[in-house]
Amino acid sequence: MYGILSICLLIAGFFVLDFVIPCDFFKEIFEEKNPAVGVLVAGLFIAMGVIIRSAVVGR
Image (cartoon, rainbow, N blue to C red):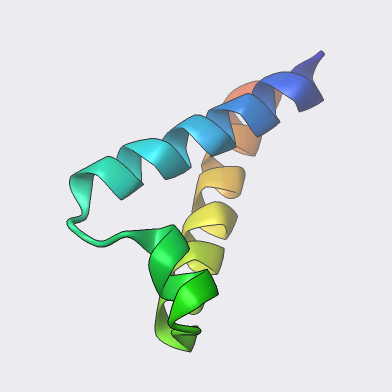
């Protein structure tokens, strides 16, 4: 249950950040093959994962 909730929160956080930052992440990563945006998105998922894990575990 917590795993599904965590994945949903990660996806929701990605779409919120995609809305806030005026850059189309999907176009930059898949069409233009921009590695800097890929690193940004990877770091975003790692940071959000650490935050969500801490919230779920409660420590």
